[in-house]
Amino acid sequence: MSIKKTVFGKTKDGETASLYTLKNKSGMTVVFSDYGATIVNLFVPDAKGKLEDVVLGYDNLDQYTKNSPGFGSFIGRHANRIGNASFIINGKTYELEKNDGNNNLHSGSKSFNKFIYEAEYYEDEESSTIEFSRLSPDMEQGFPGNLDVTVTYTLTEDNELVIEYLAVSDQDTVVNFTNHSYFNLSGHASGSVMNHKVWINADQFTPTDDNLIPTGEFANVEGTPMDFRTAKTISRDMNADYKPLKQGNGYDHNYVLNHETSDVDLVAELIDEVSGRKMEVYTDTPGMQLYTANFLDGEVGKGGVTYKARDGVCFETQFYPNACNTPNFPSSIIKAEQEYDYVTIYKFTTI
Image 1: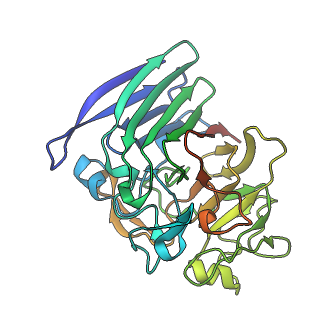
Image 2: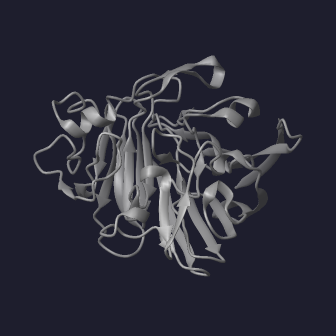
């Protein structure tokens, strides 16, 4: 295993950002930045051993300081949507930025992908690890509590990227972290992922209103285009005459994951039969947002490639959207001094 640090550039505020490259013995390579605790590159082998970068992204720091699609992003304090951009804790209403119509999306225009993090890294025979941390001060983004935040990325010799999210607050608050990488197992520059196959271990999803805020209901996937319990191409049912797909302009929905245990379980797979690459998703979070990059529109990325709608797919492990305002959802509110600790693993193999 090896770790290499290089300079990425300087922000407009004069802060120096760095890149950290982790590589294992089989050649799998992940590049992170301490700007945003972001995944910048992810090179994995295909069935013939050829390495390709399988995440959408940018070439330079300036682009990441904008990054409206959230490529490779660590998202917090709250990933996904909060209805009416507000929530109540202990009888007090907290108002957030309305950056998605009347709602709050990914905590506002300055999510956790727009900050510089302290970085520590270490390695052994079996893995390399980088740990990004910072203190999110009380009322940052409108959320109460001083929140100690750590996101740890570990690359193993089994071609796993292990992400552990840790946080502790000195006040009751809302926490819901995720990673917003857009995956394309044919390579970031290869165009549409609609022929990739997806499997999701979920019997239900959370339907939404027209603003993509969950209604609080649980809907069965059985007999609907939302059913991925048997692997199928993303395109197969994408254009079905089905209200949730029209609301999201494609898949942009939270799945209620079937957990066999309270531990980290296999919950999803992404398969590209062209390259032979396969990605398995493991997590202990209650939900996962499947997002098919419906709103990408001419974003210029790595190597000058123009990314279009559905050129990538996100598997955002998370608490359900608007869980802080929906009593029958698993709560995204943590008590003061309660530890928030969740793990997601993206494991890469071949078919």
